[in-house]
Length: 212
Image (cartoon, rainbow, N blue to C red):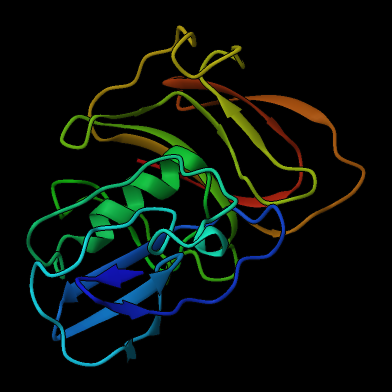
């Protein structure tokens, strides 16, 4: 990750790993995060000169061996530090792409905590969910964790070919999030209705559900 002509090295990804990387700070001090966890504050290179280097995405310079062999789903860039806003930004990306992140899942209003890590301790694996957050333009109507192995599928009125084509509806600030503790095998398909508000289809295992 680069800030002007300085960089912070993050951990090397595993083959086919999907991850959420974020960087918050300025040229004189920043923290790199991986799936919500701080992993480094150590700058490479010496003194930064604001505006003296290009902003690179998926590469570092023009050298042939400095390009990433990876797909990038979405990039969010701010021109100010986001110390207070980082949890909301990471929550939006995590729920949208089925990436399990560390900590609470916070809506764009900064107050709605729709997955509390302390309350749901023990069920912090393969977190996935659906929800609507007008403040961030999030409208996830079906989802599953991107982690390998058998995963829970959640969909409003079933699963459609795409999220956009799912005909189910949610109200703003309505979420349903699932976290896994330990799988119970064999798995079987089961349809569940929560509070008669959100009909969903999911795989049966040992999990905890939070509906808000």
